[in-house]
Length: 115
Image 1 (cartoon, one colour):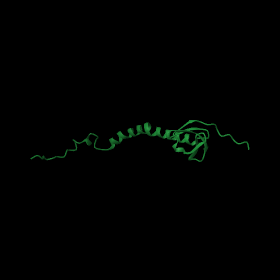
Image 2 (cartoon, helix red, strand yellow):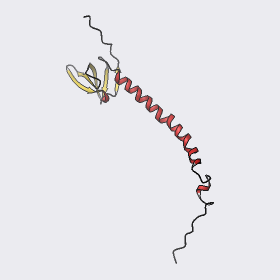
Image 3 (cartoon, rainbow, N blue to C red):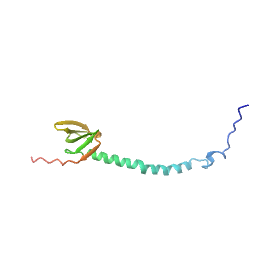
Image 4 (cartoon, rainbow, N blue to C red):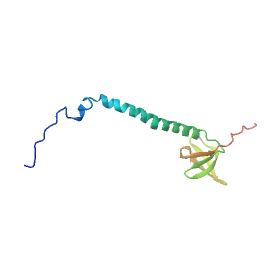
């Protein structure tokens, strides 16, 4: 016969006996791993996203921006989501703030009208 009988291993021979047979030891191993994961990956990404949101929120007229390889100067803030950008002399386009990849040069603050 080519087929032999298979016998179940006893509980003392299994891998579960190495950890005492409970999942508590696995928790003890994974908790420090998750803490390290949080401080090395999740927390810095949140800080970077918060910084980017702040930069995009503070774009003003006169700022030089880069969007998908197009460099332009902000001429008008349309609303919270859109800007008007001049990319060449007399050529203006509307750009969504989320498409902006970089703010290169900060412009001057808008002067109050002497009304």
